[in-house]
Image (cartoon, rainbow, N blue to C red):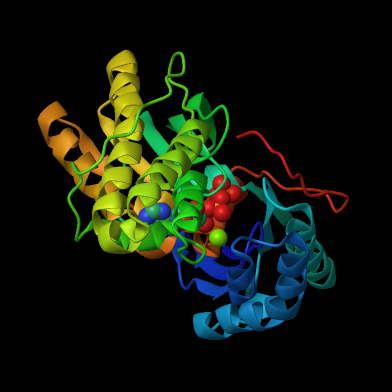
Length: 332
Ligand code: ATP
Ligand code: MG
Ligand code: FE
């Protein structure tokens, strides 16, 4: 089958065409408008999706060498995400499906982050564990098959991507700060500063404490030296990143031990982080894991992962009706 997939859950408008399970392209328009506000502004996101969606879809179709008439289904992100942003993608998908008289396929964005691992080889074997780390989520997913997954651990408050972005904001770095912390961390000493950990029961996480701890840490240091951040930005970023990565790895190791699973994957925007990738490789080698890390373009939000999920749902005969509505919250 040929499927067109649309992603519009947050601040990237993206479209992708998939042919018999092979992703042909992945067009992404990232919204620059949020940068000056230091975070995603929902109202502006909806408007930018509305402005970008036709061009993005046209480009995906054009680059695939196919036309609307070749499509067997239209897929879209139903949730979780920003309601106004999701509405743009859902409405566009419905309109196109109606006009072409082809089925609609709804996709869960968090399932799609996991299924990004099936876009290119090597692919994990079932069952595997996926640590999904993004701007809105931090979860350990037990993946039993393409469409059967269970969350076995998750954050009780902030997502780890949020912790990266908020810490960056406190340091005065522009949004989104995660990639910048990653960049500076590569030049710094990860043992320069220590932060305390908030412990959650079982396989759950908490990342709201680190934000406050970090704020007070910088406030105290700046009292001693007003130029503390400027002079030590690399060491601060390296130490903070090491701390966040260690919190993730502790739970992932526990999950692997509890389940006996040794195929271990990471997904979501924070899986682009060089420190996390490196630590995962090191720990994986010690533990005898096979590890799976998606290509960078499939870590952050993209429609290729939506297309991949839609392909499996199409094979399953799993279609949506035209009265489907987006969901801001949507469990896996
Ligand atoms: P969700 O998928 O939970 O709905 P989202 O779609 O906003 O949230 P993604 O696009 O998957 O999340 O990821 C964005 C997040 O990833 C941001 O918090 C960003 O700072 C973070 N991020 C991206 N690259 C890196 C990096 N190299 N290091 C650390 N964090 C990063
Ligand atoms: Mg984003
Ligand atoms: Fe995402």
